[in-house]
Amino acid sequence: MQLKQQIAYIPMSEARGFSSFSGNPIAAILQATALMFVAYTGYGRIATMGEEVKDPRRTIPKAMIITLGITMFFYISVVFVGIGAVGAERFGTVTSEQVAPLEIAARSFNIPGSPLIMAVGAVTATLGVLLNLILGLSRVLLAMGRRQDMPSFVARLNKSRTTPYIAVLIMGTVIACLVLIGDVRTTWSFSAFSVLIYYGITDLSALQIPESQRLYPKWIAVIGLLACFFLAFWVEQKIWLIGLGLIIMGILWKAIFRLYSAP
Image 1 (cartoon, helix red, strand yellow):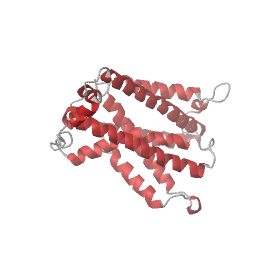
Image 2 (image 1 turned 90 degrees about the horizontal axis):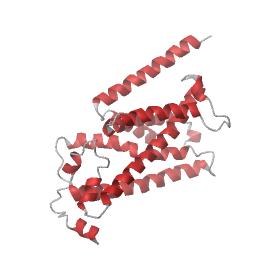
Image 3 (image 1 turned 135 degrees about the horizontal axis):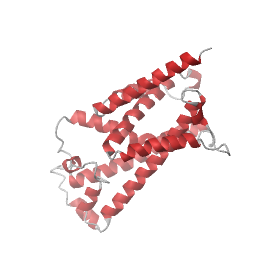
Image 4 (image 1 turned 135 degrees about the vertical axis):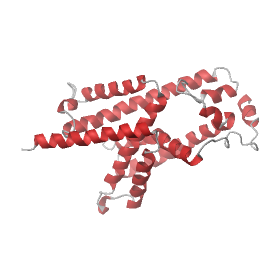
């Protein structure tokens, strides 16, 4: 009841929460879209279950679409309530020292313990994202080790041959170092650039699928390819410059490795 009263108190006619953007709104929306893309990437983990589900050709696309729809509904609901309650300007003043930006909205409802619950929920959700990254990236590193794109020792498995323990340790260490930077925005921006680039490459790969095996028309992959590469460069300039540098280093590593491994 108290929550309803707080929301009802917001004069929607003023639209103070949704009309207080400053600067270039188009640029702000594009940058926000690039950063928010990371929040939707969990659906890709569904594809890793291809060997464990019945009729994956039908089940996996259906599961992805349903997951994206449900996730989008909850994200939009949270954003609508949060910005409507405290305004975009107050969210814009949140710094990287804030554990959970939505804690500001929680305080405005005057519900006992709500800021603490919001902070704990944010930390728990972030921890889940980090563990998910370790799971996915360690398997990518494993595959790269097997293909000789990385040193072969990263492809070693444990005694039961179920876990690439070296790849897990390496990616866990890398992610821990990024977290210890202490700047959530920098870490998130770098993740956004990386994710957009490799999903763009995924779209490029989808264009190579033979027509007989294709589930969806090519124009979907073309739109995804252009959108990913376009949005990737709306993060901070220093982020995409570092990202491009790492990509170039990877290409050089591959070229040198092929040169010296050629018979």
